[in-house]
Length: 384
Image (cartoon, rainbow, N blue to C red; front, side, top):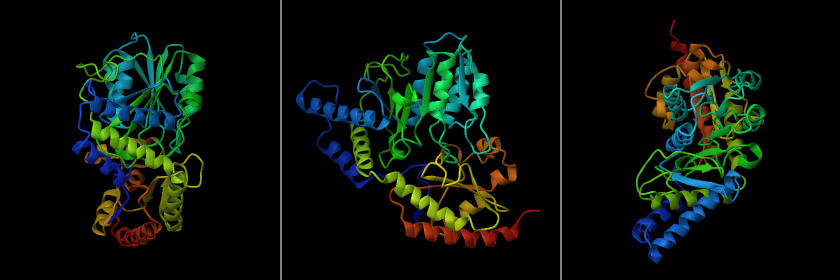
């Protein structure tokens, strides 16, 4: 099996599994309790917070709020901030956001706020000139993903933040970092990011855990009420096995200082073999461009539907996707790809290949060979 859908989820590191197992067998105490074994668990959780702070380039006094994953982190950031604002404020969001953000912004609009959609260009990048025209002194919240989950385009977060603050110095900037954290550099302090969402299972950690990094001083209204955990921002008994597993994933990713270069080398190796095929195109920045994330490759095959190619590859024990795993069953043409100017046919002929640290060069060669073989075969049955 060659697994090339790491943007959907990753296989956990063995050390993550061991850490979680130890926690469940021996360190199973409720971190909110007052006795020493529970306090030890709390200290271990706080070490995870500091590891995330370091990797996100946040300040030591900034806060890490543990959540159940990226979706909850995005919801807390957007809805929690909206609840502190007057409806005269407007929100800006990119047109290529994951449903965790896009659907939450739809709720914000139903709350009475104006939500303005930021367009993208043909490379899948935020159109900064067009975005600047959408901003004014009432722009209170700007949301933009760090890395496109479909094309791997790295978004110009720092420039977007600076433009927004030139219009309103009190604007909040939220970044969905689920596809970027620890694969693309992030420095919240330098880039002007106030709220940063991350997810454990995208970085070889466990499912069901994530975090929202919150700049000190940002006010949020909790979306889950109860026992008052996480400074009253996210009540509920701590999922300590998952949090300690997340810590181990962050530690192991950090120890692999060449992780981005390793992923990029695999991506470029695969694309070098596919790019010579007539009728195959890359969507978004090319793999050798600086604003292309090292682990995501969006490829269109002329005359072959992406769904057909995906299923044929699965028959060869190669797993890819046709877009976001959260919407893969809806069978709709990607709005993100259409926003980039692709025709419906081109968008419909697209697969997403996403890499993880457990992939190998041999897998890239084998996958490229199978993709070429299947493309040559399937294009003969082009629909007329």
